[in-house]
Amino acid sequence: MNLTDLSKKLAARGFIPVICADGKAAADKILELIPVDDTVGAGGSVTLNQLNIPELLTQRGTTLYSHSTVSEELKNRVYQLAASAKWYLASANAITENGEIVNTDGSANRVSSLIFGVPNIIYAVGKNKIVKDFDAAVDRIRNYTCHLNAVRLGKSTPCAITGKCGNCTGKECMCNVTTIVHHPTRYQDKVYVLLIDEELGY
Image (cartoon, rainbow, N blue to C red):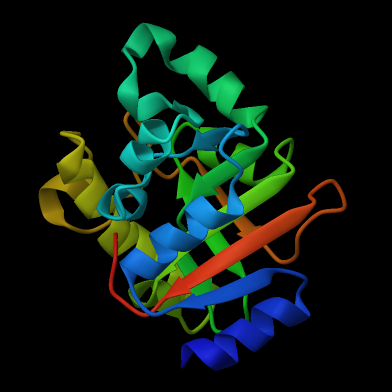
């Protein structure tokens, strides 16, 4: 599916889609949308790191709450601060051709912030994450995304070892909560979806 058609599907659902020619354009758009003095929460995201967003925000003086930058002892506090920020940044594990945004989490800090509490959301999503439907989204997450993230994070889950989902239930499981965002909620002011014409993240 091309980005223009997906953009129309997202707009019909109440999202604010923005087509970005590349990662640089997406990063520029994020900095344009977020006022310097606003607070920002962020989920762990390879895409955001590839766009250099954490560094760009902190360099200009914006307060960023990201658990990726703090010790294990401080993570829960940062999760709470991120969930009460003015903006929340994340990617998506998958977006269906019908405009539904699918994410799977282990600790649920990211998905919970994306669906409640934070008034303004920005998803930054590479074109490689567009899938046909929900079943394809789950397959992508379990048999591709989680494997790469588990390896990156040094986990010992079955997917890290075999490359395929083992339906694990241990403490390191990365598939504890899956959300499907059909529309923004009435508690959210603006939910932007940056569709990036480049392959980014997992």
